[in-house]
Length: 460
Image (cartoon, rainbow, N blue to C red; front, side, top):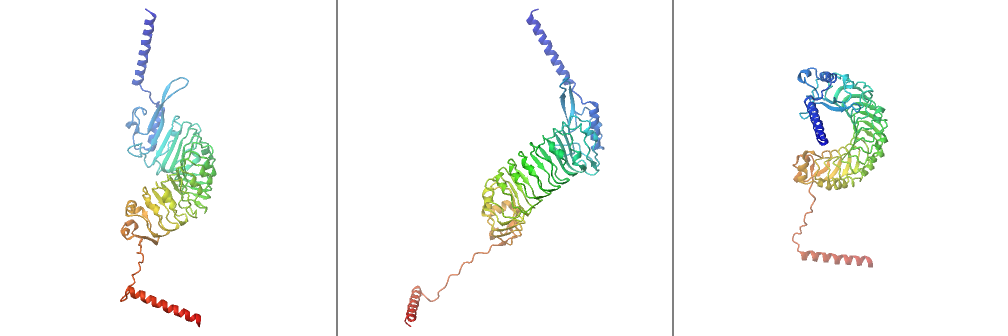
């Protein structure tokens, strides 16, 4: 047998062996180890004990899992052995598109979540802890190095300090804890999450000053602390988060001056500082230097002063919320001139006066304008088509000197305004029995008499 024949035969057996191996792997898929499978069953029972999960899903939970349980393959770098592990656990029915295992009103929080799933990347709970109180666990330091997303939404009975949650999460990208019963201050450990891209802590019971050092959070794109009880000044270090796209600090007790350092947030497109206690320092002029802004909301802060001329570079803005801010003076016509993409404008409950700018009538994208409870006056400059398009979301009541043209007065949105009075037109003077020549003759006689009277005075 020649060398070539031997080589071909060896190649044939090698290929055959490989194909057989692949075939066997396909016929015998890797299974989740029994201990991890049992832990999944126990966790499922803790969130809904009325369902017999072992009967409903009797097979391998990685091959035939319920929605919300996701697995992945892992290769040991030394032995090259391949194993399969749970990487995502999502609980709480969201919609038909995300039918996660539903939670019962008496759901409990299983400690196995932080001890049995070493490869977990995502943990998600939606409306699971709503009645029976579930305490925030103390997460062991050995857990969390692989966790990338930690999400708890609308779990009002999930209570405890935030410090209990922030473990060894060196890989964490999303921390979303919204609508829960989490209380206390923001722990300093939050500032060490170097890979974090989103921090949403809205609608909890957090309080105190925000003193955490944010300088390490270079990748942060979303910071939402809204709906809590924070107070004191907004830390100027927020201005170092140069990749930030959304900043929402609304509905807290922040005070002092809105920090000028926010002007460094050149990528920001959503800014909401509404309903805090910022002082009487006026609308921040640095907004003019943030050309990517799409929404800016400052309502409920008595900043005072006039609406500044800052709109020239803000043509991309879709929404402006400047309600109840103690604003005075006239509404700048430049808002209507430059904000051509504007969809929402709220200037209600201020002390604005003067006329409504005619330029507002050219805002083709607008679907809501609220100018209620000001001191605006004059004729409303909007056309019938404009008022019909905006409809009932054109809010104008509470401006007693503002009037509407009679042809628009039947519109429901402007029906509370008074009708503009017609301009006074002087009646023509009627000269009865006197011709034009008679008038001329009478005028001439009067001038002659006036001349003689003047000469008499001079000679007397």
